[in-house]
Image (cartoon, rainbow, N blue to C red; front, side, top):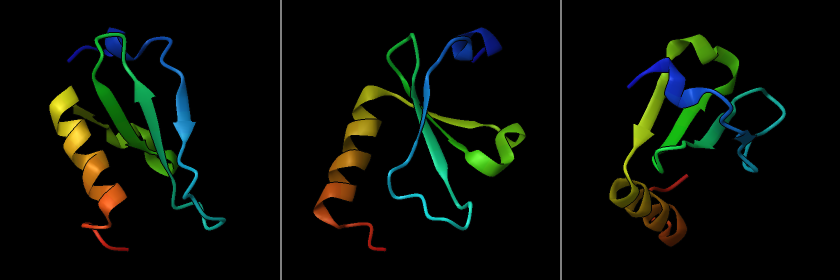
Length: 68
């Protein structure tokens, strides 16, 4: 993982983010991998997922398997 992979990535704030600044941002990397970071602490790092892992996560969220 290099810093170049994040250059020019359009980050999008989650639509589930509330007014209390507990937000996450998502970005689609040039490599096709998915990235997630904490909006209020971007220096903390980025979690990066391959396509299969990301799809399993999205499926779990949509099905309600992860809870609230």
